[in-house]
Image (cartoon, rainbow, N blue to C red; front, side, top):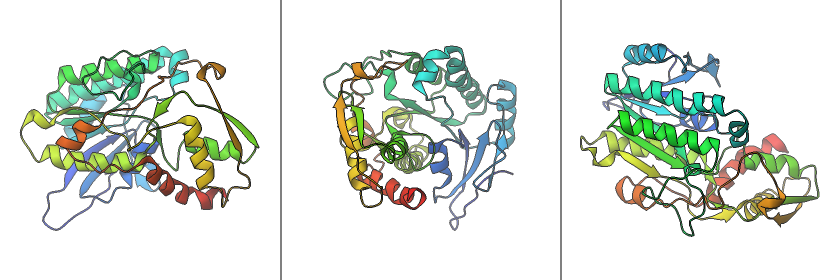
Length: 316
């Protein structure tokens, strides 16, 4: 069976199906040191970093249902999604299949087999016009195809399942995959000057911290029968910044091993046109998750330092 097994004395081992195992959040979850029997699902890859995967067509609802019936998991973590917002804007039918239809198949199967679902979502369900940080109860008003597809996925989960966690996060990065940190380091090696948007605000969040939070949340939620712990939560790193300031911190922290430290010029979003409009404010209020579930939350600079330590030998 394609899974990671861990035994901790007499502690019951929880079986978890992980979708999106090839993504950078899925990869970080696979690296967790925890008493879980993790069954990674992939649409095409039979192994990830030496870990066997179950090849499952998530678009086939019958296959999804059959696999869940076979595995009998305690919990499903859904990180599968298309998150490239510009691609989604231009390929809206593909975005809907990945971000809505897959969710429907998973939620329906979870309902049929009484399995809890943790579903990852995004700040893009909001329009970004609020002056302060967004709470879970704030009006959902996405401004693009990606946000609308994620909103639709959330709605399906809420409609079909009582036992669910919807975890919204933002500005996610890691030492692997395509993300802002790796893009800046690559471009920074090639240029002396960079223009980076400085009128969008958010909390850069290390995927490894989200993985740790998911483990902490699962322990809390699955340890109680009460439905009060299920529902929608926001989770990001502490602090806030702009893309321009984030880039400057990246270059400063990596200055001892990057060949040069480029000058970063802040520009308005209007000078950097993209297919999909970005929310100006992506700051999520995490008071609810802090008070009810209490997962660890570090400042975004701490997560960045960890990622840069991992990347420096690779990029020197």
